[in-house]
Length: 317
Image (cartoon, helix red, strand yellow):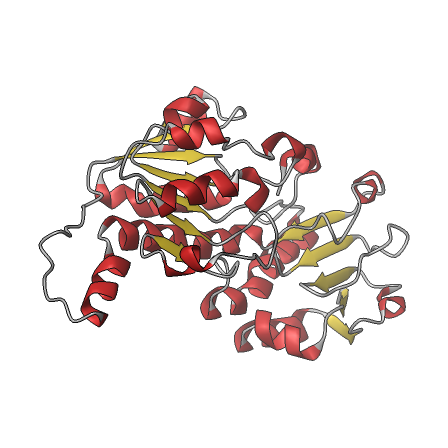
């Protein structure tokens, strides 16, 4: 059997591996429980990692790295690809959790549920000055065609939304396959619903500028679950506080953020602490998601959806 080293704490392993996958692990691999002692990884065929696993030096990497978490950029350096190491990441599974978060945030803000909640707590019943909106048939602008964006696209399909995507790497054929249209950055941000799905790379810092925020249509719903630095947060919050737009923020330019009392009290601002991809079911599925592809790779040389393509390293999250 292939030798597999689990390089994470017992608590983290329990968080990212369900019972059925643990049985699979024990049945199909000769397992070493390395914890954070990376010297115990030596000689393994596969290393199973997650959040909290220390950075793996290229000389320590076994032939296969299976990351039961998202981005691998803090875990390994791209030089490992030159050494023939195959890297797998559960980012694609996390994407579904993020997609559900984005849909929930869009629906919550479009229907003005936080405002109704505030009114109810103040003793108001059916306030005549409030009425929510449906998202059926509306235009949705997505910045980036990442795995999280694709999950949201799937979830939006039943609503018949006109989805436009700004992504320099998305060609017309791929867009057609996804059932979306390509658009310029200006066009995507002109939609009444906007969701950000860009990676954290130098080219995306401040991509949602003050000028573009000012051009958002009145009443727009804006969601950022990707990277805080992609948005000029100060400008966005100004337009939220004056009531012109509504926003859901799960990421911030500095984390944890320092928010003014006005921000914390704004009923058109939905705030969450970088948990868009954090669900009970999603976390427990992460190890199984990468192990299925690792086994297919070891047995048949297949590269499943969790395989990290070295050619996409520069633009990956």
